[in-house]
Length: 464
Image (cartoon, rainbow, N blue to C red):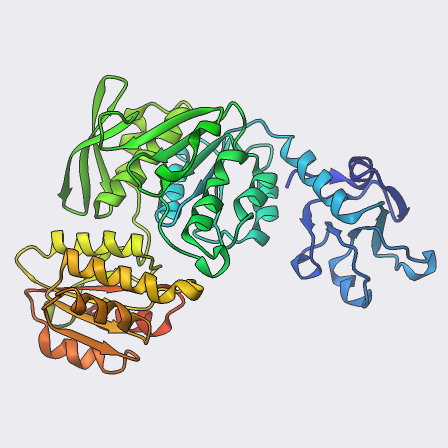
């Protein structure tokens, strides 16, 4: 955080100092007591402080509050600014802080690919710029303030994920970041426990259109079915489309698998460029297109971006290849699971498993609420359409996708389990060096993650 004096904070929030030194510098911000981890933090709250003594190790602490305290009740280690409304004061502080910086700020949302796209942009820009970004996929609404305050004088660009847990999350993130560039990677079906309907989820993602600077840029996957349902005509800035169609501003052609990634030709502004992006799957091409489009909008030439992208390191547990039990191949995709990412993973399994026995081990899709049955049936349709040689599901809800696939005519062997206990011995019996196993789940499923670890061939111990 760019240091700010108590005196300046009082002016920004239209408050007045009632206790402590106005010269103290503020280096951190919080709106919940449990967020206060360090001294020199400004805490905005209407709640009454019960235990002043517990705050002593955090001194000096700056309390911005609309509660009235008697002067004798305020301990020496607390600096207090009195305001008319603590919440309004908080947002005055946020807006002031954001307006200190005139740099490109990218906000990314999407059902799948947002973390990878964000990391690609960060990787490309970090070659010669100081970049602030979301840590991996830590993108909760409570983290927005700390990410904003991570922007400092030396920061030249920022890249943040704006996740959707419920309607209003993207709008809320926009209040913090005020992005100059927005990206919607794709829109599948997720978090329906709070968004209630697919249409509600699509509109929640579509809030991105309203948070970008009026002269900013919106980058979308032109071929994503649900993204097409958004009314992009209400966006007044520059619209950039990425995809395979020749109407796209950044178009990919000649896509093919190559060693540990994807090769394709990028067409932009009547020029063509050879691109190699680490990570398997056509979805990775779309991630790369969005990332290149974003950095190009910031002034990075495409050849420079392409060269830097070659050294991008694939994210852990996102379609990573390992040698597995009985000399099989393991495709670990246990970071997250949606129908969008499942479809991508099954396609990668089929490409890498050409000529091999292809086994899919799939866990439950979470955060679906009352839509759980329908979405798992849709997953079953994907499995039947794309196909595998053996299907194994783990979990009661995951069984729905297996049953539905069979109902639709899926004729390969199917095994359904309530937990992962019997899966390992089954796989030991049926896999060999000509087998590739996709294991698909999310980070919250300890059983699926543990199974993925067990299936990987352990490296030999170091020699004495």
